[in-house]
Length: 355
Image (tube, rainbow, N blue to C red):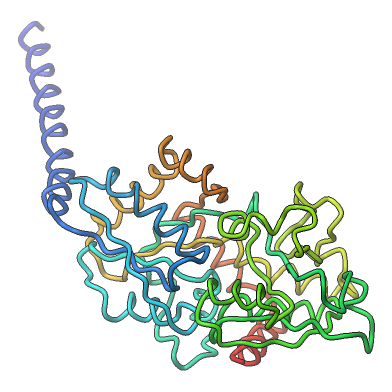
């Protein structure tokens, strides 16, 4: 019996040692790859906007959580509402784990619907890292100047009433889609002036009075133009989108769901709000080694638990309500399974929002 016990103990010890040596070997291979390297984080917009803020915030902390602690460098690649950066990620980015991208939340939807011949990617094939925000604490707001003919949301919806002139960026940008959705579901009287290169240019256009306002993330306004949210700032919010209930900061501002003209319009609002679960998406290209993809996913999740990241996010007043890679894919699945009639509306929406 003592000999048998010793044999079993030796076998167990051998298996334990093998497990200890095998697991670190995999981790060490990833560490060895990344050590001394640079990871490029491409953001699909110019400097100064909300996506740029999130990309630089993540880029400042991500490298500490990737095995081997590579340097992370943020590179702006604006164009076509971030479509240029997504096509780059899909076709031109290195597939070794040294490239990731941050782009507009509606890019996955564009790729799935196949409405744009320039969208040369299938988002379901990306190696998703996750999303920095699920919009749980955010809102997509229609913010306008107070010195324009449209003073209230009732003015903006009155048949034959004055038009709201809203600015938008390039083809496919979320800011172009939402005014059309609001037109079709709550009766917003709107005219769009699209083609501004980035959020910075749009904010300047609002200050100059070139446009009445825009639709954008509340978190972006908090980070970039916080003074606009103060009383008597010369700007105010008319409606909230991508909210089931009113945001705590705007208890007197209605949601789009509240203003829907009928049940069909409300259901359409709910579908078009789904991409906001992917409020700040990050992904790596298809085809990168699985161990490195998993390391990037773990690093992304760890970054959003990092006290230093959370402290910086609080200073910037940006929302932290992250989604995992699996949760991103689940959201894409929900969109994919929507009724055909609603998907057809989304296809028409993309066609119109090209501006």
